[in-house]
Picture 1 (cartoon, helix red, strand yellow):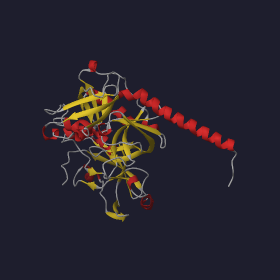
Picture 2 (cartoon, rainbow, N blue to C red):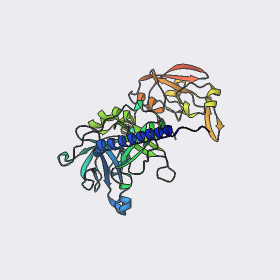
Picture 3 (cartoon, rainbow, N blue to C red):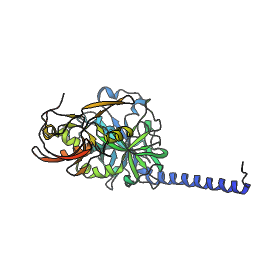
Picture 4 (cartoon, rainbow, N blue to C red):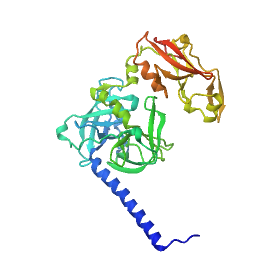
Length: 382
């Protein structure tokens, strides 16, 4: 065993101590600077749901943060949706007897009434507006980072209101990026994954980098027991940036909201239940799949896709206890736009009207082909 001089060991210990001190100083500085802009969101519900113990009442609500110079606050839609008379109504009015308030770091006991100005169920986002902004603190917005530049391993700081514990801070790292999972209404979201502790009540709060910028909006945990088990998910900040204009305009926004409001919109007439990347790598290689795309798992009989020649799967293979369709059509592009997940197809279709023709690039048996699909209204499949 190699023995190092005592001076070398002392130098290493000094360096380790300095690095640890810098790490701690950074956390303290970020919290000091942006902490006042993080709020607790309180939801009071009418009827029998009001009959709760103090412990249960602390579970109703979540977190949020100031997002613009007008003092508006972002949170998750799922935090506030149950307080609404009808979450599908663009008016976004509170239910009779419900209340929605926020409290700030400096005065957590003082609650300020807010309304839901806009909501985007696609990304599980809601924009809140103070009813009396003059009576509330004005700490300023937290800047958004470019979440496309987030790297695995970098520092992550979460601030929120878990279990009603106002302005709780936890620290970890980014564990993964583009962790595709269904969001609030089933649309795939490329989540940022973190091991910074996130628990019920953190939803809607910021996930911050070491510069104090928002990388993501804390949204969900993967925990069989209902509490944090090392896997937290945040909606990337760039999705919030993309949605902000429509959120500020008010009402429901996003293509899923548009589809809900207009049930007779034209459809492609397919189900795309899997992405290419969902298949085991060995099976993808064996089948010669393209590097990306979505797998057509069902085609509506006599629907637009069926009439254009798009096919459903021929059979399925069992791999590690899971069935994977094979002999499939894979949509790789639509209207020339690259397709990586179902949302890429849905966005294009919801921009079109009945009778419009869209070009769908389909991979089949090792070759790509372009098919012209005339959109029409398709009855729901049983």
